Image (tube, rainbow, N blue to C red):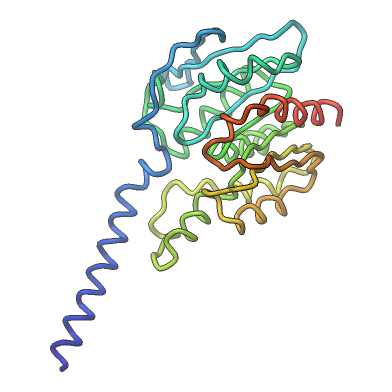
Length: 260
């Protein structure tokens, strides 16, 4: 009997260690889901590059819908090529100009993504272009919040926001020591609490299937100056940009920020 109990305990421990190692060893690809991100050449947007302080070349694009329009700096999600958003959606929002760059190893960008590297480059981009509005989608909302926090940006647009990769991972793997295992934590809720003067617009989806409800509630409560919030009906986290009127919804949020 004791031998059987010992074997069961050993098996449980082995499974626990194995699951922990699997999460630790695969976390980069889970956080930066870039393997299926296609390389895209812009058809409407103007292709540009950004050379970081350490010489890494990031691929990007610029949408200039007009002269003297507010500039929106956009950060994409963890499995997206930013050029798709600029080329297919941003071009329809005529009262704003847009700029964005792919994270390291996304599309044709050089380098390797880590939290420290992504945030470092994002803040360098902000300092060069000094946008009127910082925007982000999914993982990019954490990046945008960090940029707003570090640079005291005045206006921030969050599309399907997260509170942190850490909290999302805790919800998905409740029995694992996630806090100890996770390197790329992106704790946007902590940075959000420091946004004293930043006006924020938020776009949520009715059928959120990626970000836990608790995480959404947490990031919303962490933001002190939400001037606009809307929920897009009949839409989930993954298909928001296929929604027919998404450009109109983004334009409403951006205009709310513009006039706030």
